[in-house]
Length: 324
Image (tube, rainbow, N blue to C red; front, side, top):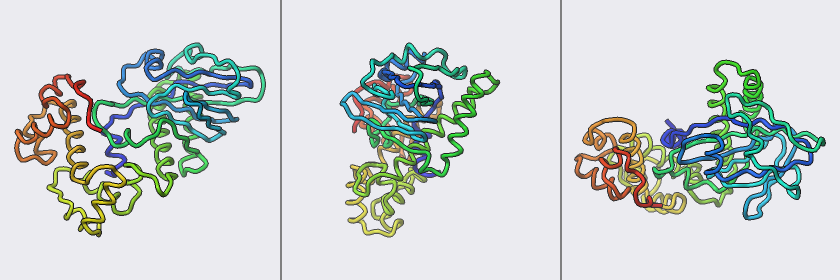
């Protein structure tokens, strides 16, 4: 499994398309914060991302800090942390609330029409839920908002047709539409993320930038492919055909932490997932992530999360703030 897929699987990403809007100029919509949208959509999730895909026409998005983004057909704007914003044909108009427009949540995603009778813009919205109490490198690397474009993606036409297919199926409440909408929404998020990675500036820093780096990317791939192995910086450097000092410096510059510290934290993230997802004995989990003894694993887990594996498994995972 590649590194990006491994991390995406670990955060248990789930999604759905929930809103199909046909807006006629002038129009403007205020989109609430993640917490408010979770209540509107009647969801139960700790982590919440949001996206808007423009299928036809053009519009603007404005963030709380005043930043404005121009969108056109084929663009998807993603809010990884569900920040509130305004979207519309012109941001000077008085916005209507999302709560006033959302009529029926997916799978019965009926088309909502709104606006002043001018030029048409079609926007489909999706939500993505993820677990946010386990440290994940992707969630630390993403900005508050980013834009990707279908026109720059190999999967662009497939995504556009898939979204149109889901909206048409939802309109007639066809059996199985919910399952299809979920898969399309998740694919939309992944493709948007891949596009974002592909177009990062050459001087960018962060885990996603490290993924693109020839040596750091290979180093990440090795650790994710076999996290239980007794890796050393020397062994990793030899495997990626780099010197120890160059790899350590480059890894720390891009990812923000030394290679072995990153490995330890990823092991703990996998352990947290195993603890929550089943009843495996602690000794077996310790072995699966590279610890020879249950005691050593328990000490490392408590150092990372502030509580014991047993308390985490029992559901008491909302303790002290997790390390950055």
